[in-house]
Length: 212
Length: 269
Image 1 (tube, chains in turn red, orange):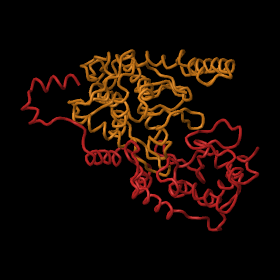
Image 2 (spheres, rainbow over the protein chains, first blue to last red):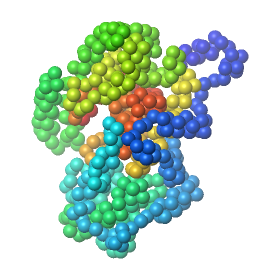
Image 3 (cartoon, rainbow over the protein chains, first blue to last red):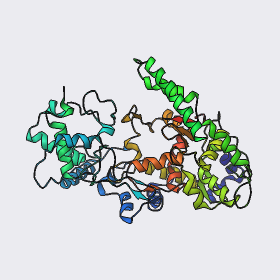
Image 4 (cartoon, each protein chain N blue to C red):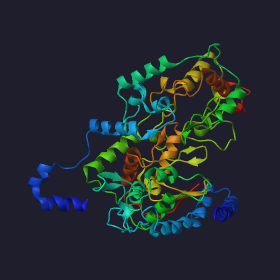
């Protein structure tokens, strides 16, 4: 910093005007520079996997620097896109098996790319444990998201709660635009059937989450 | 060598465990273990290795790295990493420590770039890579000095802003950018504490302690590794070693870490 000042002082004002002063680039320039990096500085075993870096419309809206607030129009658009994204299991059953959901909730693996290889799994883990408290007394759980302990005990298992829970896991932005929660179903990380198992895990009175 | 390291690590872990138990009931019993580990850091072993590698005549040109210029002049290491990343006129690029090290290993020693890159990030439980040991040694020569990254060249400003942009850029099937996990205080992924990168103190604590010994991997890890590993966990494609994207993020974080006193090797769980 001091060097710069010294240089400008020695060169004098005319040179300063002629050379132009180095400063922060504007938003459009930054966007251009950074997006060039995104397109050039990552690798993947297949071109399809490289596309993971491409942003959909909602992700673009949800990437504000400094987490600046959304405008009403932006929030509305994210909500609209999220609602339109939700797909349900072909069976129509939104509540699966809570034990399967339990396993999924504690599975943080699947679909990672390392050493030029894609992590091969039959299906992806649900990732819940990474960010949410689950069964009572469970210690190895994260706290990035709210606690889900006693989720069903507190809310019951009415049809409205089932649908809300399913939608929330499938695409959380249908209720909270741009929240930190991944749109697990909408991005294809989980299948509708997997989401239904997790719904069961949360609302079934027998589930470990609702154990007293 | 690896066996020795393992034994040291195991002993340290065992000690830390006992202490943590003895102090059960404290607000954060894990903090006690972490403190113990930090006091007897196996990463120290890599500093000597890095020093030997730095001054040894190696590579097709049978040259040492003592003419490598990290920004303060050829061979001047004291305080050099306090100013990195920075713009280098000879390459016309903003470079971080590891990127600059690659430049020197290629230009001075004649190593093939892709050969170094392939081995730069070592497998866990291995004896580590040359780059990891070198990066630690070079950084250790700034120990006790304050981070002082400057933005003055236009490309430095561009890097900083691109880093900020990338820090908030959400993508992929987890919809994650850096900010989703590193934007609030006192958060954890499972039991792992997450650094809040919107807090100057916490940024400082991170950027001044890499390269660090990573207990779970039994090797020294660099900032390039730290960033690569985050993208892996986010399910995104692999961040290219010393790419502009990685240097942009490093510039963004290091600049905000200015004022922090460098103390490496850090210790990470």
